[in-house]
Length: 457
Image 1 (tube, one colour):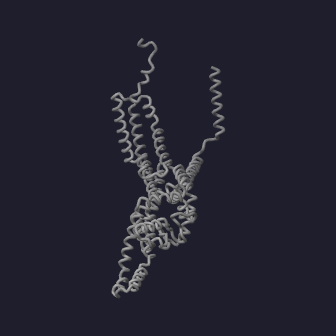
Image 2 (cartoon, helix red, strand yellow; image 1 turned 30 degrees about the vertical axis):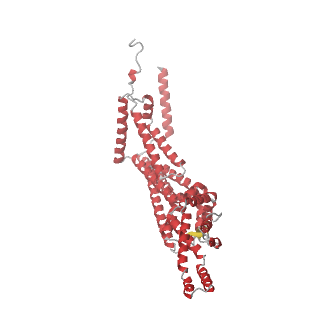
Image 3 (cartoon, one colour; image 1 turned 90 degrees about the vertical axis):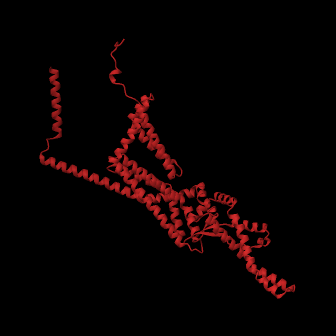
């Protein structure tokens, strides 16, 4: 008893010392002041979080379009296969082929002096004593001869330009001289595509030489004496090329790190937000809006470019096709990021408390649960693994979603189609996991697994 009483006394003494150390209780005035300070500190902390999140979101939104453009430029400069894929359609684009054929035909025919030829014929006839009417008729041959020469040259040039061999030579030349893209973007190096002082030109010297040889083979022996003609065709004309090249060099440097920076800023914005799900949804929506702005900007730039190109320099349809070919991968990347942003925003909404989100979750859970229970009734129980999946639904869901995101990150150049494929696989895996978890069957009651020894023996 003494021991018990002694213990009680020691406990009471310890509690007394704790109360003494804590000080006397707060009166009403002191408690009000304490609550006021506590509320002020909480509000200040919340404002800091909102401010930090807002700054991070603004930086993310502003840098997201620039990151997409920078990544595109970096891929064009660093990846030869990607560059060849970009410029390859130029050789097979009908409008470009027609423009090249017309320009080459004109340049070749312009270098053939048909009038001098007919004058020589006339002088020869006159010297041989031909009638004056015949001599005068020689001059009339200038038009028909020019037309016939133009038709023959145009036909040969068109066959050369539209042949598979030309496309193969074009691809091979660009693959072996990938420095062309460096030339266009930085003004360094050289290849079939060259950057002039205020233009971007296509060098078609090989085609010109091929056409001259084809003319000789077709019986136009004098074609071998045709002087060298201008072997370049202007693709882009701009008086701001130097400034654009400077901007592209900067984008090339930022091509690798700027997208990483945007991802880090977005992650920090979601982490610092008072409500992580709302912050994630806001980030996704903002990035999606900026991708739409980028697409609109590219469309506006396209129209500005077409308006700046003189029809005498390049036909409108050819200029439009060249612009679209060069920027098609950039547009594709922009649409891909837009699709990912939309999917992310929808996923964040579906995890929220909204009525529609709850209904979709209930429907999905009900569907997988009914399928799993039907499997269990037919003897296809998953047992222990199913119980483990059921107990760790959040972990397995997170791992599957993270795996899908990692697949897109590791995908060299994801497209909207690849995003849809990964999304479909993720949804399919989640459905299968839900079915397997529901097919585990009932857990045996605990009293059945702990029988009294000897009972039933």
